[in-house]
Image 1: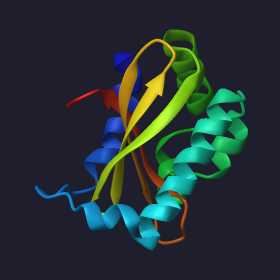
Image 2 (image 1 turned 135 degrees about the horizontal axis):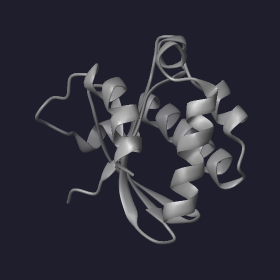
Image 3 (image 1 turned 120 degrees about the horizontal axis):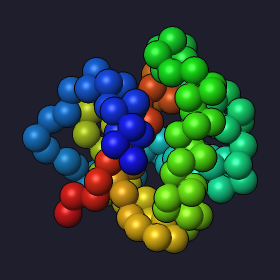
Image 4 (image 1 turned 180 degrees about the horizontal axis):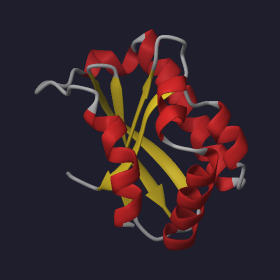
Length: 130
């Protein structure tokens, strides 16, 4: 599990996070696009389609994380946490959406953002913080 956090942490670290979250951001067009990417990510992970998930990733992400590593990490997540059951939006800060990702065996914080081309830039699971 710690391997997963380390793998995706550097992507998240490149995005500055402000101290405020606005509820209005949840209803924004950008938030809707992030919701769509998050739901696609959930579907591809649940259907064991890491290739399809990787196709959603942007160039910066792909430079740092290989398809093989994504396959490894998504397999570990599924093995340790089970099926990804639901997503609960928690807000958007500086273009990074935070969700409560509920899996069959545990819940995690899930962070996702888009690059200028609309591809995934940040893709991070962390221990749930309330």
